[in-house]
Each structure stands twice: as C-alpha cells, then as structure tokens.
Length: 84
Image 1 (cartoon, helix red, strand yellow):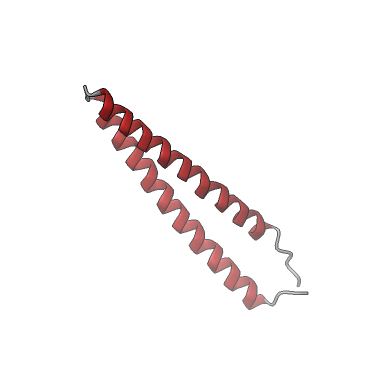
Image 2 (tube, rainbow, N blue to C red):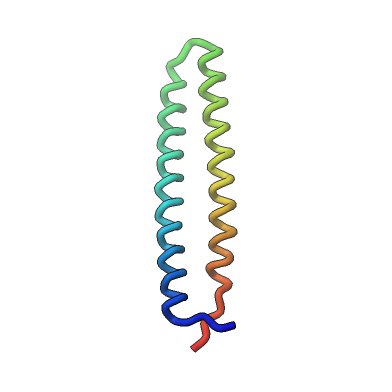
C-alpha cells in the first residue's frame, strides 16, 4: 500500500506538532523541577523536603513516560517508506 504525497505531508505535520508539544511539556517539567529543587535548598522542615522530593520523583516518572511514548511515535515516523 503506497502513501500519497499529501498523506505523507499530513503525517509530517502531525509529527512536527507532536514534537513541538512534547518539547514544550518537557521544558515546563524541567523548569518546575529546577524551581522545586532550588526552593528545597533553604527548607528546614524534613516533611516539606520529602514532599518536594516526592513531587520531583513523580514529575520525573511522568517525564520518562512522555519521553518513551514520544520515542515510539518517532520510531513509527522514521519507519515510513517513501514511494516516488
């Protein structure tokens, strides 16, 4: 089954939109984790520090989940055969 040129362009546009979306989401997570980490430096409460650390871990796990899903989509994108 061959893909037409317009189908490939539509798929490329979808892939580029997904790349931009994932990049923005991961950038926001990274900035939030940095802010939480620097905020935690001056804290004296052990419970509050553990809460912040737990939040950072949860964000990191979610970050990995987004990254793995994106890599699967990227693999699908790269495996498209172009028929001329």
